[in-house]
Image 1 (spheres, protein in one colour):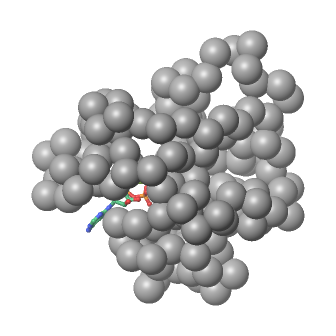
Image 2: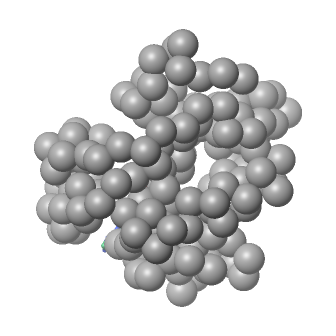
Length: 140
Ligand code: ATP
Ligand code: MG
């Protein structure tokens, strides 16, 4: 399988509970390497642009408010099949459906406040990485 890069976000519910280190440990234990990382505060407008694909969904406004409610940690994860592997480590969107041992099973508070975001395909990974990082900030 090819070496890929994917965009990960540790969401406000997790940064507020000081879970950055525990979540990063899950990525590293799964063989993913954190090749870029920064803690930032999104505005509601920036969150809205990032999640524009969901703008017709009923939870869009709530999602944008939440993503701007506290700092997030944005990161690029690299490894073999990193896009799918990251989503495996994250677990299902709704923590009630997430496999035991996944980040969302262990840490998520609800379907909305679910601790992490991960890109879902090579095209979105490339777009989402470019949304947050310049090439020089990614050190593999
Ligand atoms: P993400 O894109 O954040 O990695 P995902 O791909 O598992 O999550 P999506 O369907 O893309 O899930 O939804 C994006 C985000 O919108 C979810 O992670 C969650 O924070 C929020 N969300 C999804 N469904 C709901 C819902 N029914 N109610 C509230 N918020 C939701
Ligand atoms: Mg998604």
